[in-house]
Length: 76
Image (cartoon, rainbow, N blue to C red; front, side):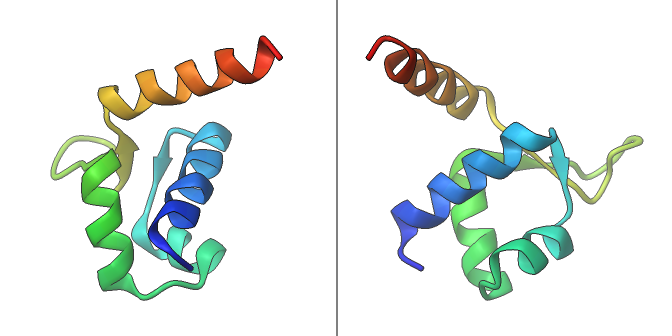
């Protein structure tokens, strides 16, 4: 899967729920772990501690971009 397609799929998954483990992403996307981590670092933040430790959450810049894309689709 190319990078843009992976990012689109990640956005779709983040719309389903906020927090994801790398294992869940691997199961849903069937992509190598190193590639997933590389792309996730561009659009998400890894939680190191707290109740959601070990999960990825979309970063604020990506959330804004996703909201903008949704607004554009809604305006068609």
